[in-house]
Amino acid sequence: MTSKRVYIETYGCQMNAADAQLMAGILLREGFTRAESADEAEVVIVNTCAVRDHAEQRVLGRVGELKRSKRAGDVLGVVGCMAQRLGERLLERAPHVDFVAGPDAYRQLPQLVSRAREGERAADTALLSTEHYEDIVPARESAASAWITVQRGCDYRCTFCIVPMTRGPERSRRLSDVVREARSLAERGVSEVTLLGQTVNSYHDGEHDFADLLRAVGAVPGLRRVRFTSPHPNDFSERVVAAMAQVEAVCEHVHLPAQSGSSAVLRRMLRRYTREGYLGVVERLRAAIPGLAVTTDLIVGFPGESDADFTATLALVGEVGFDDAFTFRFSPRAGTAATRLADAVPDEVAAERLERLIAEVRRVARARNAGLVGTTHEILVEQRARRGAALQGRTRQHRVAMVDGPAEWIGSYRTVRLTGTTGATFSAVPVEPVREEVEP
Image (cartoon, rainbow, N blue to C red; front, top):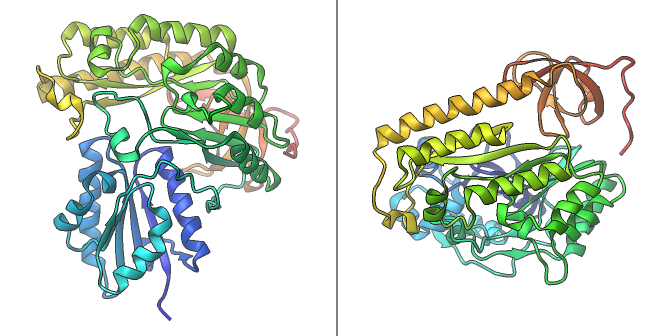
């Protein structure tokens, strides 16, 4: 009997990580077993990102490494956004890749593996407007928290973004199906869920909007925390803001991509809001939700970005007071409108701007975090820290705290006092007496 040990290696966003769990669920249902590493597997699947060229080059390098260790009879597949973008061209470019599958073709993975073992190389990149994988149970690893994909695809056409081409048009799952999945997770002991979508707050299943979804999921017995990512600034209706403020389970954190602090650049990006509009959304959210933490995405070096435009982005960091930011240098993606824009920013200028932006983000975040030392928070203990013997937990505001304690605390909630900060994470001690775990 042919061995079915599979290893899935994932790059990119939380949606990709959730898709990896979905793929694992499909393959395990068909008799595959998990391998702990690529070296131990007969089937290796590389789950890819296409947002930036650097991500694709990293994947191509990794696929080249896997070629050298590939044994006779082994199968190597590339899936996800990069696979969708390149399709059969990837098979031509990398003869050692046996199959390619886009985000809507994961049901076909067992068949693609079988066909590869018979010597057939194939690419499946059909985009299916009805595919939500409703009948698939993702193979999740964490016992305390889980992702729930509520929306796939995107209808926005930001000029820098490849996602509409790699994931297709926006479509939302039925609210009842999302609630059913959330209830099933809660019954298994999961107490925190993160709702995922490309522009998650534009969710609409034909009858219910994102406010309805937050209220419905937040009411599921046993769910203690509800998070979501990534929203679009344009889709924070009054109904959505009210639901965030009124549903106790919804956490006091929003990841709100700004991309630029310049209205001129935002217009070239086709973001459909201005600097003032973005600041207005932040103001409304903070007025409704005291203690809200705000994180963001920022791009520098977009075509036509002047020194004044960049200065506006730097100023936005301080004006909003972001708790953290993912910062990027503009990466042109073939097929997007931004590749046709004039006035490219020289690489050395973009690189220097990125360094200055990172420094400003860290300065602002460090100052905000220093002001929190001495305060008390509830954390969900998630795992052991990557270094040292401490445990890693996360507050409702998505801040990471390290605390000493037994491994039995993992998956439980603890009240801690923040005792120090590195600028990015906190050290903490349990508040005495140690709070007992509350059953979800």
